[in-house]
Image 1 (spheres, rainbow, N blue to C red):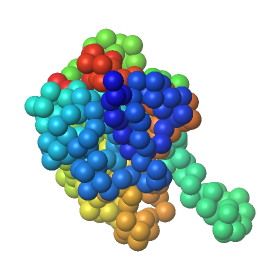
Image 2: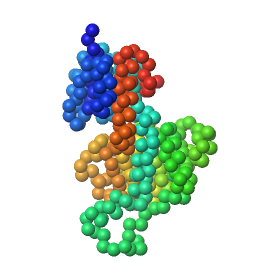
Image 3: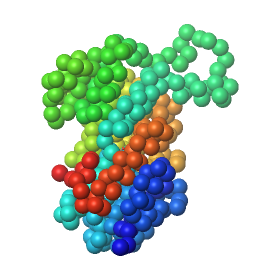
Image 4: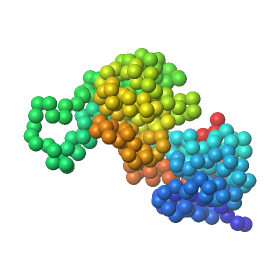
Length: 321
Ligand code: DGY
C-alpha cells in the first residue's frame, strides 16, 4: 500500500523528519523562507498530512482545496495562522506544540525586559560605534527591575513562567486573564487586576495572551494613555495585539521609556518603518522559542501529532475546540 503523502513547509530537525518518513512519503519545501500562499493552496490538493509553521496562512480556501487531508500539525504553540473553525468543519485535527517552549519563551521575555530596562542594546550600539567616551553619572541610566511592578497580560503557561522568574527580582507581580487562578496567586505571589488597574499600576507590561481577532490592537492609544509615565512594554506573544501607530505615539511622546518586541504585524517589519528610528525600541525577529533544544523538541512533537493524525489517532496536543 502507498504511504500517505505529507508535506513539511520547512526543513525541520532531522530526527523528526526521519520519524515521519517511517510512516509517510515526505516532501519538504526546500527554501529557507515560507512557501508563497499560492504554492500552499495548490500543494495541499494531493496531501494526507501537512506540517506547518506560523508563517503559513492555512485559510478556509486551503482546507477546502485538500480533499484527502487528515491532519495539520503546526510547529508552534500559537495557531492563529490556521482557520481552526474551517479545519474542524472538515473533521481535520490541528496539532500544536505547547509546553515544550514555555520556559524558553519566558527566558526570552526576561531577556527583553532586562535589556529594555537597562538599555543594553543602546549601550552596546554606542560602544560598537565608538560613541562611548567615558563613564558619566548620567550615561545610559535606565530603570531598576528589582522592586518594580510587573503586569502580565495572559496568565497561561508562559505568563506563569514569567511570573515565577519575577520572584527572584523581588517584584510585585500583577496579572490579568479571563480566568482567575487562585492557586497560582498563592504559588507565585501574584495579584489579579482588571486590565485598567494593571495598566495603571505596572512599571513593566508583558503580553502573553493568544491572538484572536477580538484581541486585535488590545494595546491601543487609550491603553497606552492609561499606562504609568515611563512604563516599558514587552511583547513576545503576537504582533497583532499592539496598535503600532499608538506605539509610535507612546515612544515619541515619551509616555513609554522603552518597548521590546519579539513579534510584529506584519512580520518582518517593513524596512524603513518609522518605529525603527527609536533607539529605545528593541525588535527581535520572533525568536523567543529559538533555543536549539526547544526547536528540536517542537519538531519532535509536531512529528508525533502528524503521525497520530495520519493514523486516525487522537493528537497529543490538539488545537481544535
Ligand atoms: C509559537 O510557538 O507560537 C511561538 O510564537 C514561536 O515558537
